Image (cartoon, rainbow, N blue to C red):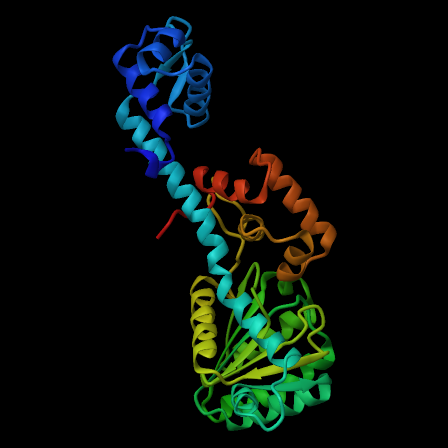
Length: 340
């Protein structure tokens, strides 16, 4: 009956029997349930792990059953925590899928002269090297008429790239094109990038920051998406995606991140005493999704050493043996949100 809440039939039967006969020993309970005594002990261990029984020296089993209302709350809270931790993995799937599409579109070209080649060319373009990327971005910006939105991931940016982007951004804003950009929180500690973000904001662009970003990308008029083919080296090459479904998914991803981002003139580190700083919260979410320390470092724009230190500290505080378990414990502790 309660298997949907993570309680198997034998453990449920033992729990019910303990409620009805709180002073009965394990051997007698096992006999009444028709179970070998070892299996009854195993079921009791499962109940203890679920916190449905608590130590009590005066009872026959050495445990007392938690009341039904409290027990159901515990089971529901645990299930909610597990679902929330799983949802953290799902939330990153759209960006991962889009990145995979970008990589596959360049690694698996269709046969020349075929219908699939024409479809492939219509859905994506391959750009090799920084010069080609810069030229195509200029073309796309020149034809944009509604909005350009950007995930500026990868940490700090070179002063050369920042200077090169000001004239195109100024031209876009002068034409009435809306610009929204999300940077990493870490750029607040890099003066050139922070100065550029401030310049963009003062000239009419909208700028926000978040602790981590799923992918580097630029979207033009919700019709074209530019992503790197190599997340480790954005200058190596890029792909321009035209596919309606993929671009729509990336637009939805941008909006969800934008909604939770902090405006540039806000301090992203304000928090209640019982919550984590934004950067640690971002690490915790990435741990729950199973990301490596290297990926966490890249997503937050910090060094791998810093990422390893943050991850180790959080897992130790949560007494977690795995990254998924860290997410479950974090939800139970109120550090991560439950399911929507």
